[in-house]
Image 1: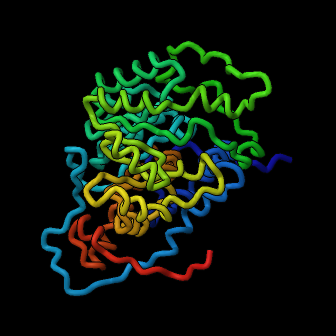
Image 2: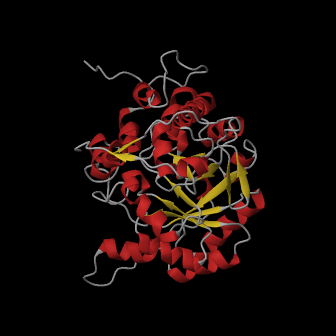
Image 3: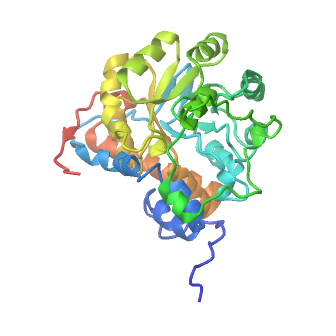
Length: 375
C-alpha cells in the first residue's frame, strides 16, 4: 500500500497557522514533492555547512536597550546609488517553477508588492523579460559566466536592455559537491522545467580532458570565469557589478581592488563545498578587511528577523533570502512570498525597537553578545 501523500497545490490565501516566517519551512513539506524538497532543503555532501549556516546565529545574542528615541525609526538603505525601503532582498534562486506553476512570475509580483529587490537567477525557469513585466525596480540580475563569451555577453545585454539595475556575478559555484540527500531521494530536474534564459544557446562543447586528467579539474577549467573576464565585465558595465560567493577576507580585498561595486558574503546556502565555514562566522572579518563604507551583503541561513538583525550588526548592509522564498512560494504563491517578507520585516523592526535602534546604521553600531551555544 502506498502511503505517500500527493503534494498540495499552492493556496490562494495565507494559512491561519503561519505565525512566523520560519513556519513556511515546516508547512512547505506538504506542498513540495519529497524529491524536490530534498533538492531545495539540502546542501552539498552531508549538509554540514547547510546546517551550520543556521546554527551559527545561536552564537550571538541581542542585548535589549532602554529609553531610546524612535521618532524617525526606519529600515531604509542606500546602496549603489539606489534607495531601498528595507534590507530584505530576494536571493537568486533557480528553477522556481519546481514549486509553483508560475515560478518566478509570482515571486516578482511579491517583490513589487513589498518594495523588495528581486535578484533574478541565470537559471530562472521563466525569462528575464517575463519577470520584468511583473516587477518594477529595484531588480538585479545574477550572472553565471557561460563557457562561450558570446553567450555571457548576450545574457548581460538582455538584462541591461530589460532594465536590470545591477549584475550579481556568482563565482563560487562553477563546480559543486553533489547533494547526497537529493541523490538518495532520486531528484532529477523535470523535463518541463529548464533554464529559460539559456534556451537559445548551443549545447556546451564536450569536456576537454587531457589524458589522465581529472574530470573535476577539467570541468572547473571550462566553467569557472577567468580573472581577466571578470575584470573586463567590471570595467565595461554601465551598472554596478556585485560579486557573490565571497568567504575569505583576501578574496574580498582582491575583488574590491578589481573594482567590484560590492560583495555578497555567501557559501551558496551550503550548496557548494560541504565543510566550509558558516557564512555568518566570516562576516565580521570580511567587513573589517574591506572597511565600513564598502557595500557588503549577506546570505545563507537566515530564517528570522533576529537573524537579519545579527547579520547587519556583524557588518552586512542587507541580506538575501533564499530557501524561505521557495517554501513560501510553494505554500501560497506571490501572497506567501509577500507575507514571508512582511513577517521578516516585522521581526526585524521588533528587534530594532527593543534594542533602541532607529536605523540600519544604528544596528551596525550595536555590539552583540557572544553565547555558549555549544553546537
